[in-house]
Length: 389
Image 1 (cartoon, rainbow, N blue to C red):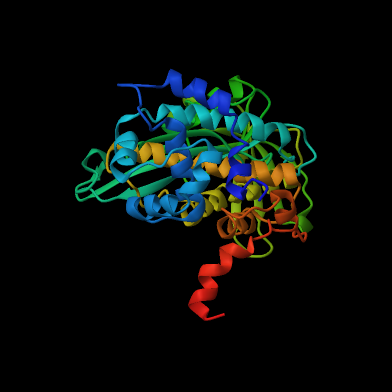
Image 2 (image 1 turned 45 degrees about the vertical axis):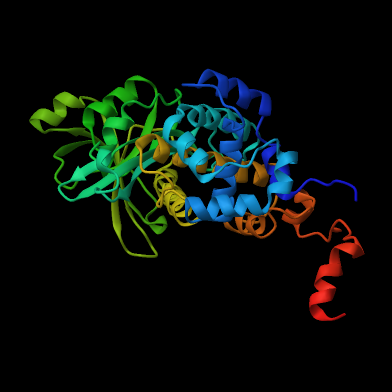
């Protein structure tokens, strides 16, 4: 029977193997491997993410059942103890670097953000991942609770998590926001959790635009008024200055305040921005698009394994999170390359159901009829005996 690549094999071909091995050598620690390898670790953990395995035993048993296919993936079968040891000991920085490599490839083929302006558009937010303090004592958060926090600045071109950090759950969102070096001329949408007037001033000095929510207790004075089209939900468009003693020192620059009422929900918003060139309705639409990062967090928590972990050490947890993010990029990359109209959820479902099938992945994503590799009649002899045929 002629060999044909499985769906999993075609997915893994999207990972530049030479680059992976260079990174694996760079981030190696401890003794050399005998039979196991970082590639085998990645393949096994990626299978766990794509197939939704729930435990270390479940994952290893699933991979063992497909042992005859591992050779064509360049991977070796790992025992539970081997996989647990590698996750525990080998530096998770390898997968941070792999994430950066895959992100670069995704950005080169990703679609635009859908707005007319050419500026890069980002949304930034953070999400807490709860952990059991008795099992993960290094993740102390509160008196009887553990957790870590995933900080993401998402590029709306392809909805890709471009800037990602994982910290302890105590770290405030804006502390990580200050560390992100956004490109000059880009636009960043954030919620009230990122309110920091010194940071707003710093972004303005760097030529970075922001769209945020104005706090209700902020004291301001109006410098200039502009007319708005009230039929679009806008109620005002003002240039303002802060008048508070501390606020005026931290942010001594004029900003733009836009008031908007959502016609669907009736909820009223006050947006704050340092961009004076875009239309007020566009500023409101930019903040509304920030919802995409909320959907991103919801998607990865529901579909990838970043809430239940196969190891208890910090390195094992971080390894699993970074591999999950790499798998997210691989799915996004498949979507971009295939130009499929299917959602990320639909694509993941298709991959899960056909992971070890020998199909053309392009035809699978487009719903085209495709031929399976023919089955030798001798392979059915055992089934025929059981059924009495």
